[in-house]
Length: 255
Ligand SMILES: Nc1ncnc2c1ncn2[C@@H]1O[C@H](COP(=O)(O)OP(=O)(O)OP(=O)(O)O)[C@@H](O)[C@H]1O
Image (cartoon, rainbow, N blue to C red; front, side, top):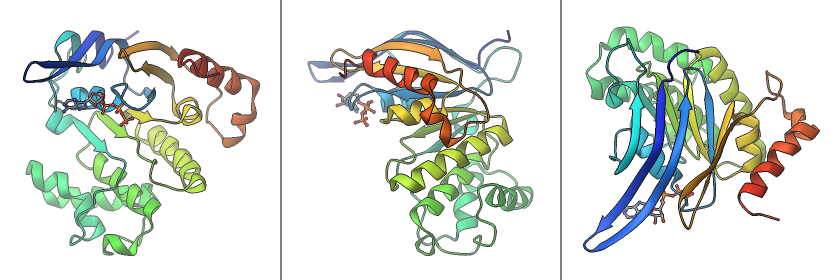
């Protein structure tokens, strides 16, 4: 098998404030290969966002090993090689949808002409054809989040990090967005790491799942999810799906 895009071994992060120390992430070990869709699930405060911030290069780590980028390729540059999607779309309200999608291009100083073409193609891919010149307030919450996904892909990053991307959406829109996201993942072949509070969502989306626990912070398990592809909503009624969900409930100590 090829070298992983991301290798973590016993990764650890401590937040320090004056004399106080708080262990936010510990014992995180996993290999993430190109094209994987990894879901990170766990209770509030178990360090999911902290782990994403470490992968995004926004925080350092205090112990263990983190290697990103595999071997043979150019060095991994988080500014260029990571696309982020947050719980809120965080679109700039004075910029049109296409100009929001182009924001990373402007920030990174990349050539705009080719990027405009790519932005239109991405808007088509996320189902927003015809909305390029609208302002964010003219879009529904789900549509805004689609624009945020297009923005995360515009600079062709190697790694897409999503922090509770559908947490602010209603249940039905969230299920639709899960399907959309799987389609986008299949079309782009990119590597995704997705934080979720929802055990069902973690199982439905992931090729792999990392289960984190709090108090003390640690990784309880990391395992592949071998459910039929392409995933369709009805697999949620399969016994195998239920087995994965139960495994996570057991790891989290939920009766
Ligand atoms: N900058 C910081 N300084 C100090 N402590 C922090 C900081 N950021 C997070 N923490 C603490 O680290 C722990 C992990 O936080 P983190 O945001 O990574 O958890 P999470 O699993 O993403 O939580 P949630 O699901 O509620 O978003 C929490 O107890 C939090 O209070």
